[in-house]
Image 1 (cartoon, rainbow, N blue to C red):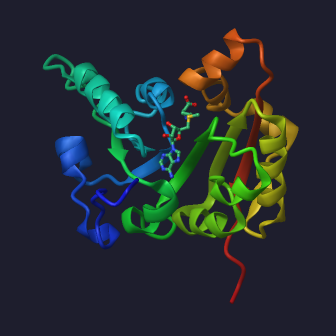
Image 2: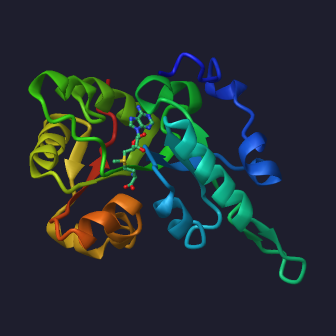
Length: 219
Ligand code: SAM
């Protein structure tokens, strides 16, 4: 349960230096990995986008503690070239289905990742899925126009569900096959997470999709 989760009353009240140290100064979180699990995506993307702050949100405390320890073990300040490693990634224990607008301002995020989310197979449990019409409105609020949503799952029925609801939402459109093929991040979405590697080991298909957040319509 999540009654013990601390969260800010609004984004302005969040102290990000607690997660990123001085690296948070003058920067805002741009990438969010929702239900980041053991953090494989964040760790792989960190060196590729050193200027972008990335946050993994994970509801299970044991798992978030693991990721927090892993990141702090990787962090290095190097004196020679002034480089900082892994200070742009952090993990937060939180319920992303409840508290997203407490952390992020309107149009703050440029990428959101939903990688191998829990399938909630039974019909009466579909309302617990991480992609629903109500939650898409929150994701659209936090994402900037032109921002991207990445989804992937090894459950074909869940893939169809996520694609259906994203397609139906007026603020999202799917990238063309050509655009998906040219996306630099997609290979990491497919291969870098623990669940994705497990699916590959066990020979299951993976179904990725990328959606673009469209501009707000004129009032
Ligand atoms: N994305 C990771 C990967 O690909 O390896 C983990 C996938 S795992 C099947 C789904 C994760 O989402 C679990 O670690 C679970 O604890 C987390 N999760 C489920 N609901 C969540 C929520 N509302 N907020 C944050 N994390 C959540």
